[in-house]
Image 1: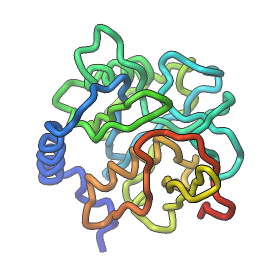
Image 2: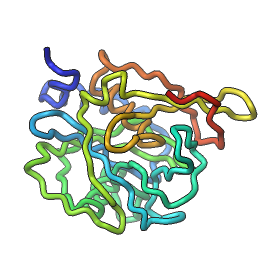
Image 3: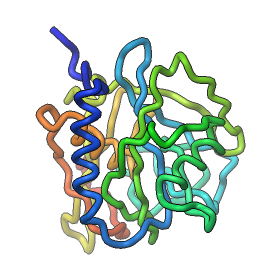
Length: 242
């Protein structure tokens, strides 16, 4: 039996995803103030997503930081964030005046963080904009190809570690969790968490991962979470994480 992620980076899947992303492009409103690259790849032939662990050197607010920084030790760390503890992320940051669009921002940030120069044909398209601490962030989906064919040179000032998770791993329910958050003492929303890898994937990165799985495998992944329209200050509900 084929594993859940088999065929998700095939030429047929790419054509379908590109068409879906292009169809949604005309419905976008506000321009993005920041962008991240969602790096699809294959590892020994297995479709995967590439993640980075944000460098602990980036303590406090950082001009290029559009990633979540962990506040607590448990799954229930919420969107109000403090501290300089490393967290999972995708390459990305704020848009520079010289960037022509969100794709240019994502490609530039990937080059700066990972030493990886991607050509425009690698880009499949852009997922819907997401709020992050007052910024609208554009997730840009691209296929890096076989990871074995690439030479990554992570910038130690921004990236502590690079790791991948197979799409098959992310699609298995036992590796999918969630956290309920409350606002004003009552239920507000639910965010995803991806478990059982080398690092827990949560926050903005988990939301983008979920949207990517919906794009790639609409018949195998159904969103179980309710993401707020903007990033409010909220607390996790007791017992809300699984």
